Every structure is written in C-alpha cells, then in structure tokens.
Amino acid sequence: APAGGSEAALLIASYAVALGAFLGALVLLYKLASLELGCRFASPTLLLLAVFPAAVYFGAPYSESLFLLVSVGAFYAARTEHWAWAGVCAAAASATRSAGLVLLVPLAMLWWSSRGRRPPDAAWLLLAPLGVLAYSAWLGLVEGDALRFLDVQDAWSRELAVPLSGALDGLTAAVDGLRQLASGRRSPVYFEQAAGDPFRIAALNLMLFGSLVFALVACVGVFRRLPKAYGAWVAVALVLPLSFPVKPQPLMSLPRFLAVLFPIFMWLALVAEERRITPHVAAASAVGLGLFTAQFASWHWIS
Image (cartoon, rainbow, N blue to C red; front, side, top):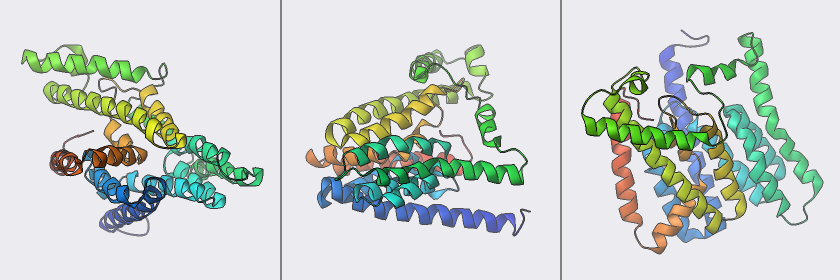
C-alpha cells in the first residue's frame, strides 16, 4: 500500500480531486466564456465540453481535470489582468504536465495586448517553468532521478520526429486502417506491432484521424472567431503530440489532448448557437461519450 494510506483511499481521493478540479474548471470557463463571448454562449460552451467523448477522463483519476482548471485559470487571470495569478496557474500547469510550459505563448500574447503592457506584469509569467522544476526536484528526492518523467515517452513509444509529421503518419495509419477493415483479414507487420486486435487498432486509427480533422478545423475556427491568443494556445498545444507520433497509432491519445483545449469548445458553441444546432451537436457528442465511457469501464483502450 502507498505510504500514508491504502490503495483504495488513494483511488477515492484521486477521483475526488479530478471531479473537484473539473467543477472548478467549469466555473472559471463560464466566467471566461461570458467575458469573451457573452453570457449567451457560456452555457453552451460548458455543455459541449462536458459531453465531448474524451470528457470521460475528467471523471477519472487522470491529469485532465487539473490541467483544464489551471489552464483556464491562467487565461482568466490574464484577461482580468491578475498577472501574479496567471503566473501561478501557469506554474501549476507545467507541474501537472510539462506541456504546460507552452502556456507562456498565449499568456505573453495576452500581456502584449493588455492595457499598459507593464514589464513587471510580464515578469510574473516567468513563474511558469517553476512548476516542472519543482516536480523534477520532487522526483529527484523521492525517486533519485529528477528527469524520470521523460521516461514516459519511451514507455509509450513516443519519439521526437519531424515537427507535425504525426499528422501525415496519422493519415497513413487511417488509410491502412481502412484497408484492414475492408480486407477482413489480418494485415502484416504494421498492425502486429500493436500487440492487440488489428481490427480494433484499425478502427482506433480512423477515429484518431477524425479527431485530427476536427482539431484542425477547430484551430482555424478559433483563430478566426476568438482573440489570437486562444488560437495560439490550440496551435502550440497540438504541435507537441503531432511531433511525437506513436507507432502503430501515430495520433494516440489525441482526443484526450483535445479535451483540455477549451477554446475549441468556445468556438464550437459560437458556431452551434448561431446555426441553432447546439442540441443536435450535443446529442451526437453525447453518443460518443457514452461509447467512450462503456469502453473505458470495460477496460478497453479508447484513446
């Protein structure tokens, strides 16, 4: 059992933290969406985020809820010009995920467009790297290896490739997956590397490529309809997984990465509300969430 308590207590606590962080993220996102878009679009933003298929991870002991909370918090603090809080939230984001470091890009853009543009305010954003440094120090003390978190990439067979090459690899995997499903028989080496059912891997690769298409369309939409800092957040956050592809699933976990990119759901709420299709979009997404949840609950890999 872990130090300080049983495994059951640790699991219950992790669920409580995840759900509490998600609730906090929804409250802050409502305020942020109201600030940027108006109250009319705030509730649809929350709805479309909550029924997104990968929202299943917000209720599980994963880092998604906490990362969403602190990233939304960083944006809201910056937009209301509470720069010390923006820096603290950015540090918490980088402590939660190393990818939180790239929050510096949109936060710097928000500072640049702020009233006054005071250098002391920008200095608070330099707190961002302290999160990952603190986590590294903790690993050094507890595990004896301050850089142990880098081993995760090897564990998931992620390797740095040509920037954005994961998109092309994802397309190739999707085409191969389509051929796999159409053939009705096992494909050779490519799918056998998956150490699983080749037909399931094929279906997952098609789903993941569909997620990529949605992400790219949404990224363009966010740049067009929201302040540029929001589009920059989506863009730089997508560069990371698309530059670290996984074989034989180059786009592995992409839906999870999308779930925390809240500007996507702000844009989607704008589009859906303007076309009066929010209930239809939410219903279709909820079906996907139901499928994801059923698969997750039955111990199947879904992302």
